[in-house]
Length: 322
Image (cartoon, rainbow, N blue to C red):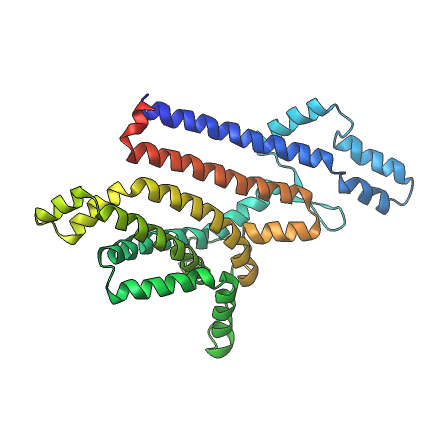
Protein backbone atom coordinates (compact mmCIF):
# COMPACT_ATOMS: atom_id res chain seq x y z
CA UNK A 1 0.00 0.00 0.00
CA UNK A 2 1.43 3.40 -0.98
CA UNK A 3 1.53 6.38 1.37
CA UNK A 4 -1.07 8.13 -0.77
CA UNK A 5 -3.47 5.21 -0.38
CA UNK A 6 -2.75 5.11 3.35
CA UNK A 7 -3.58 8.80 3.74
CA UNK A 8 -6.67 8.48 1.50
CA UNK A 9 -8.02 5.66 3.66
CA UNK A 10 -7.45 7.69 6.81
CA UNK A 11 -9.20 10.66 5.20
CA UNK A 12 -12.18 8.45 4.37
CA UNK A 13 -12.34 7.26 7.98
CA UNK A 14 -12.25 10.89 9.14
CA UNK A 15 -15.21 11.72 6.90
CA UNK A 16 -17.12 8.73 8.28
CA UNK A 17 -16.30 9.91 11.82
CA UNK A 18 -17.57 13.41 10.98
CA UNK A 19 -20.90 12.04 9.75
CA UNK A 20 -21.11 9.80 12.81
CA UNK A 21 -20.81 12.94 14.96
CA UNK A 22 -23.56 14.59 12.90
CA UNK A 23 -25.77 11.54 13.36
CA UNK A 24 -25.28 11.45 17.13
CA UNK A 25 -25.95 15.19 17.30
CA UNK A 26 -29.16 14.77 15.31
CA UNK A 27 -30.61 12.14 17.61
CA UNK A 28 -29.63 14.12 20.69
CA UNK A 29 -31.40 17.19 19.29
CA UNK A 30 -34.51 15.25 18.25
CA UNK A 31 -34.77 13.59 21.68
CA UNK A 32 -34.94 16.98 23.41
CA UNK A 33 -38.13 19.07 23.03
CA UNK A 34 -37.55 22.22 21.01
CA UNK A 35 -37.53 25.14 23.52
CA UNK A 36 -38.80 27.53 20.83
CA UNK A 37 -42.13 25.73 20.74
CA UNK A 38 -42.85 26.43 24.40
CA UNK A 39 -41.42 29.94 24.11
CA UNK A 40 -43.73 30.77 21.19
CA UNK A 41 -46.73 29.49 23.13
CA UNK A 42 -45.69 31.49 26.21
CA UNK A 43 -45.33 34.74 24.25
CA UNK A 44 -48.49 34.29 22.18
CA UNK A 45 -51.23 36.81 22.91
CA UNK A 46 -53.89 34.73 21.17
CA UNK A 47 -54.25 30.98 20.77
CA UNK A 48 -51.13 29.46 22.39
CA UNK A 49 -51.57 26.09 20.72
CA UNK A 50 -51.82 27.71 17.32
CA UNK A 51 -48.59 29.61 17.97
CA UNK A 52 -46.84 26.39 19.05
CA UNK A 53 -48.14 24.54 15.96
CA UNK A 54 -46.82 27.33 13.73
CA UNK A 55 -43.29 26.79 15.08
CA UNK A 56 -43.63 23.02 14.68
CA UNK A 57 -44.75 23.43 11.08
CA UNK A 58 -42.05 25.99 10.28
CA UNK A 59 -39.34 23.66 11.55
CA UNK A 60 -40.88 20.55 9.95
CA UNK A 61 -41.01 18.82 13.33
CA UNK A 62 -43.99 16.74 12.18
CA UNK A 63 -42.10 15.28 9.22
CA UNK A 64 -40.96 11.63 9.31
CA UNK A 65 -37.76 11.09 11.26
CA UNK A 66 -35.88 9.77 8.21
CA UNK A 67 -36.74 12.86 6.14
CA UNK A 68 -35.61 15.15 8.93
CA UNK A 69 -32.38 13.15 9.29
CA UNK A 70 -31.58 13.48 5.57
CA UNK A 71 -32.31 17.22 5.68
CA UNK A 72 -30.06 17.52 8.73
CA UNK A 73 -27.13 15.83 6.97
CA UNK A 74 -27.60 17.99 3.88
CA UNK A 75 -27.72 21.19 5.95
CA UNK A 76 -24.68 20.22 8.01
CA UNK A 77 -22.72 19.30 4.89
CA UNK A 78 -23.57 22.58 3.15
CA UNK A 79 -22.90 24.57 6.36
CA UNK A 80 -26.52 25.69 6.59
CA UNK A 81 -26.53 25.50 10.38
CA UNK A 82 -29.54 27.70 10.99
CA UNK A 83 -29.78 30.92 12.99
CA UNK A 84 -29.00 31.76 16.57
CA UNK A 85 -31.88 32.43 18.93
CA UNK A 86 -32.12 35.47 21.21
CA UNK A 87 -33.26 35.51 24.83
CA UNK A 88 -36.86 36.09 23.78
CA UNK A 89 -36.85 33.75 20.81
CA UNK A 90 -35.98 36.44 18.29
CA UNK A 91 -33.95 35.11 15.35
CA UNK A 92 -30.35 36.27 15.33
CA UNK A 93 -27.49 36.02 12.85
CA UNK A 94 -26.61 32.72 11.21
CA UNK A 95 -24.63 30.21 13.25
CA UNK A 96 -21.90 30.02 10.61
CA UNK A 97 -21.70 33.83 10.57
CA UNK A 98 -21.20 33.91 14.33
CA UNK A 99 -18.57 31.17 14.13
CA UNK A 100 -16.73 32.98 11.31
CA UNK A 101 -16.24 35.91 13.68
CA UNK A 102 -15.30 33.82 16.72
CA UNK A 103 -12.89 31.28 15.17
CA UNK A 104 -10.26 33.83 13.97
CA UNK A 105 -10.29 35.45 17.42
CA UNK A 106 -9.52 32.08 19.02
CA UNK A 107 -6.82 31.32 16.45
CA UNK A 108 -5.17 34.69 17.19
CA UNK A 109 -3.84 33.37 20.52
CA UNK A 110 -4.13 29.62 19.91
CA UNK A 111 -1.72 29.41 16.94
CA UNK A 112 1.10 31.39 18.66
CA UNK A 113 0.63 29.27 21.80
CA UNK A 114 0.94 26.01 19.85
CA UNK A 115 4.03 27.19 17.94
CA UNK A 116 5.72 28.57 21.06
CA UNK A 117 5.01 25.52 23.22
CA UNK A 118 6.17 23.05 20.57
CA UNK A 119 9.43 24.88 19.87
CA UNK A 120 10.11 25.35 23.59
CA UNK A 121 9.41 21.69 24.36
CA UNK A 122 11.59 20.35 21.54
CA UNK A 123 14.56 22.64 22.19
CA UNK A 124 14.61 22.61 25.98
CA UNK A 125 13.41 19.02 26.42
CA UNK A 126 16.02 17.54 24.09
CA UNK A 127 18.83 19.66 25.58
CA UNK A 128 17.88 18.59 29.11
CA UNK A 129 17.85 14.94 28.03
CA UNK A 130 21.33 15.40 26.60
CA UNK A 131 22.59 16.84 29.91
CA UNK A 132 20.43 15.29 32.64
CA UNK A 133 22.76 16.29 35.49
CA UNK A 134 22.89 19.99 34.69
CA UNK A 135 21.28 22.72 36.74
CA UNK A 136 19.03 23.52 33.81
CA UNK A 137 17.68 19.95 33.92
CA UNK A 138 16.75 20.30 37.57
CA UNK A 139 15.26 23.73 36.97
CA UNK A 140 13.18 22.46 34.05
CA UNK A 141 11.84 19.63 36.22
CA UNK A 142 10.71 22.10 38.89
CA UNK A 143 9.19 24.47 36.37
CA UNK A 144 7.44 21.57 34.60
CA UNK A 145 5.82 20.36 37.79
CA UNK A 146 4.75 23.90 38.65
CA UNK A 147 3.30 24.37 35.17
CA UNK A 148 1.26 21.19 35.50
CA UNK A 149 0.24 21.84 39.10
CA UNK A 150 -0.84 25.47 38.90
CA UNK A 151 -4.21 25.91 37.13
CA UNK A 152 -4.24 28.12 34.06
CA UNK A 153 -7.06 30.29 35.40
CA UNK A 154 -4.91 31.14 38.46
CA UNK A 155 -1.98 32.18 36.27
CA UNK A 156 -4.32 34.21 34.07
CA UNK A 157 -5.86 35.97 37.07
CA UNK A 158 -2.39 36.83 38.41
CA UNK A 159 -1.41 38.35 35.07
CA UNK A 160 -4.61 40.39 34.90
CA UNK A 161 -4.09 41.58 38.47
CA UNK A 162 -0.52 42.61 37.73
CA UNK A 163 -1.48 44.31 34.46
CA UNK A 164 -4.46 46.25 35.77
CA UNK A 165 -3.67 46.92 39.45
CA UNK A 166 -0.05 46.55 40.49
CA UNK A 167 1.74 47.94 37.45
CA UNK A 168 -1.16 49.94 35.94
CA UNK A 169 -0.51 48.63 32.46
CA UNK A 170 -2.94 49.23 29.64
CA UNK A 171 -6.12 47.23 30.23
CA UNK A 172 -6.27 44.19 27.98
CA UNK A 173 -9.13 44.50 25.51
CA UNK A 174 -9.84 42.01 22.76
CA UNK A 175 -11.69 42.95 19.55
CA UNK A 176 -14.73 40.96 18.49
CA UNK A 177 -13.30 40.70 14.98
CA UNK A 178 -9.72 40.71 13.79
CA UNK A 179 -8.17 43.40 11.65
CA UNK A 180 -4.95 41.96 10.22
CA UNK A 181 -4.16 45.34 8.70
CA UNK A 182 -3.71 46.71 12.23
CA UNK A 183 -1.03 44.56 13.92
CA UNK A 184 -1.12 46.75 17.06
CA UNK A 185 -4.63 45.48 17.83
CA UNK A 186 -3.27 41.93 17.97
CA UNK A 187 -0.70 42.44 20.74
CA UNK A 188 -3.15 41.72 23.65
CA UNK A 189 -3.51 38.16 22.30
CA UNK A 190 0.14 37.49 23.18
CA UNK A 191 -0.76 37.43 26.88
CA UNK A 192 -3.32 34.57 26.71
CA UNK A 193 -1.02 32.87 24.18
CA UNK A 194 1.78 32.90 26.77
CA UNK A 195 -0.54 31.49 29.45
CA UNK A 196 -1.73 28.69 27.19
CA UNK A 197 1.78 27.96 25.90
CA UNK A 198 3.03 27.57 29.48
CA UNK A 199 0.37 24.97 30.24
CA UNK A 200 0.97 23.06 27.00
CA UNK A 201 4.77 23.16 27.18
CA UNK A 202 4.80 21.80 30.74
CA UNK A 203 3.39 18.47 29.55
CA UNK A 204 5.28 18.39 26.26
CA UNK A 205 8.62 18.92 27.99
CA UNK A 206 8.19 15.70 29.92
CA UNK A 207 7.38 13.75 26.76
CA UNK A 208 10.36 15.11 24.83
CA UNK A 209 12.73 14.52 27.72
CA UNK A 210 11.53 10.96 28.33
CA UNK A 211 11.49 9.86 24.68
CA UNK A 212 14.81 11.55 23.89
CA UNK A 213 16.47 9.94 26.92
CA UNK A 214 15.30 6.50 25.76
CA UNK A 215 16.70 6.96 22.26
CA UNK A 216 19.99 8.35 23.58
CA UNK A 217 20.73 4.92 25.03
CA UNK A 218 20.51 3.18 21.65
CA UNK A 219 23.58 1.71 19.96
CA UNK A 220 23.38 3.93 16.88
CA UNK A 221 23.79 7.01 19.12
CA UNK A 222 27.05 5.60 20.47
CA UNK A 223 28.18 5.05 16.88
CA UNK A 224 27.29 8.61 15.90
CA UNK A 225 29.17 9.96 18.91
CA UNK A 226 32.18 7.75 18.10
CA UNK A 227 32.36 9.40 14.67
CA UNK A 228 32.77 12.77 16.38
CA UNK A 229 29.28 14.15 15.74
CA UNK A 230 28.36 17.38 17.51
CA UNK A 231 25.49 17.57 20.02
CA UNK A 232 23.22 19.24 17.46
CA UNK A 233 23.81 16.42 14.98
CA UNK A 234 23.19 13.79 17.66
CA UNK A 235 19.93 15.47 18.64
CA UNK A 236 18.83 15.58 15.01
CA UNK A 237 19.24 11.80 14.74
CA UNK A 238 17.61 11.25 18.12
CA UNK A 239 14.57 13.41 17.42
CA UNK A 240 14.03 11.79 14.01
CA UNK A 241 13.87 8.38 15.73
CA UNK A 242 11.67 9.66 18.57
CA UNK A 243 9.29 11.41 16.16
CA UNK A 244 6.63 8.68 16.06
CA UNK A 245 5.88 8.44 19.80
CA UNK A 246 6.23 12.20 20.16
CA UNK A 247 3.68 12.83 17.41
CA UNK A 248 1.20 10.50 19.11
CA UNK A 249 1.74 12.04 22.55
CA UNK A 250 1.73 15.61 21.28
CA UNK A 251 -1.52 15.30 19.34
CA UNK A 252 -3.36 13.47 22.12
CA UNK A 253 -2.18 15.92 24.78
CA UNK A 254 -2.58 19.03 22.65
CA UNK A 255 -6.17 18.39 21.61
CA UNK A 256 -7.40 17.43 25.08
CA UNK A 257 -5.55 20.22 26.90
CA UNK A 258 -6.25 22.79 24.24
CA UNK A 259 -10.02 22.31 24.22
CA UNK A 260 -10.26 22.43 28.02
CA UNK A 261 -7.94 25.44 28.36
CA UNK A 262 -9.74 27.24 25.56
CA UNK A 263 -12.83 27.73 27.75
CA UNK A 264 -10.75 28.72 30.78
CA UNK A 265 -8.57 31.27 28.99
CA UNK A 266 -11.42 32.94 27.13
CA UNK A 267 -13.60 33.12 30.25
CA UNK A 268 -10.87 34.72 32.40
CA UNK A 269 -9.61 37.19 29.78
CA UNK A 270 -13.02 37.90 28.27
CA UNK A 271 -11.93 36.89 24.77
CA UNK A 272 -14.88 36.70 22.34
CA UNK A 273 -13.77 33.42 20.78
CA UNK A 274 -15.30 29.98 20.30
CA UNK A 275 -15.11 29.05 24.00
CA UNK A 276 -16.79 32.27 25.10
CA UNK A 277 -19.41 31.81 22.38
CA UNK A 278 -20.19 28.27 23.60
CA UNK A 279 -20.45 29.38 27.25
CA UNK A 280 -22.74 32.28 26.36
CA UNK A 281 -24.91 30.03 24.18
CA UNK A 282 -25.29 27.54 27.04
CA UNK A 283 -26.23 30.38 29.38
CA UNK A 284 -28.82 31.73 26.92
CA UNK A 285 -30.02 28.21 25.95
CA UNK A 286 -29.20 29.08 22.36
CA UNK A 287 -29.46 25.53 21.00
CA UNK A 288 -28.35 26.20 17.37
CA UNK A 289 -25.13 27.89 18.54
CA UNK A 290 -24.50 25.17 21.14
CA UNK A 291 -24.73 22.57 18.38
CA UNK A 292 -22.53 24.66 16.07
CA UNK A 293 -19.74 25.16 18.61
CA UNK A 294 -19.89 21.51 19.68
CA UNK A 295 -19.60 20.29 16.10
CA UNK A 296 -16.74 22.73 15.45
CA UNK A 297 -14.72 21.37 18.38
CA UNK A 298 -15.55 17.80 17.35
CA UNK A 299 -14.31 18.49 13.83
CA UNK A 300 -11.09 19.92 15.28
CA UNK A 301 -10.53 16.64 17.12
CA UNK A 302 -11.24 14.60 13.98
CA UNK A 303 -8.96 16.83 11.91
CA UNK A 304 -6.16 16.52 14.48
CA UNK A 305 -6.48 12.74 14.41
CA UNK A 306 -6.23 12.79 10.61
CA UNK A 307 -3.12 15.00 10.77
CA UNK A 308 -1.62 12.53 13.22
CA UNK A 309 -2.15 9.73 10.69
CA UNK A 310 -0.55 11.85 7.98
CA UNK A 311 2.43 12.46 10.27
CA UNK A 312 2.71 8.69 10.81
CA UNK A 313 2.82 8.15 7.05
CA UNK A 314 5.48 10.84 6.73
CA UNK A 315 7.80 9.67 9.53
CA UNK A 316 7.27 5.91 9.40
CA UNK A 317 8.26 4.13 6.16
CA UNK A 318 6.38 1.02 7.37
CA UNK A 319 3.13 2.85 6.60
CA UNK A 320 3.64 1.87 2.97
CA UNK A 321 3.28 -1.83 3.80
CA UNK A 322 0.31 -1.69 6.17
